[in-house]
Image (cartoon, rainbow, N blue to C red; front, side, top):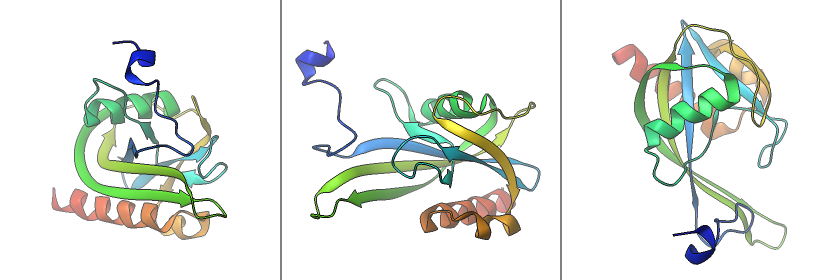
Length: 153
């Protein structure tokens, strides 16, 4: 059924329901991959690679696609990690953005990341370097959780 017949694509700003997104905690050795966002929300901030899940796409397929589009990297391993709610309200209290983020952790395949799609910059960071980057508190929590799961695996 065409998008117009379904009511059109879901608006990301002031949506009528949450948008499902994926985020990937991508590891190479003891470093985690981050991207500097080129679009709202959190434009200009460091974050996990990720984005909206597409219709007909599994969460793991979405994670692989988003990492590829934003960094050019393929993932060698992908596992589910956690779910995070990201709700941003405007000055009047209306919901401007609402994402249900399904986070995964993954190991990067060979190659070097390069910014693409909506990423302004990419970088590898040790856990000790994360505090000074101004990351969203939930991103820090998810990365720490991924580090624990990775050690346990």
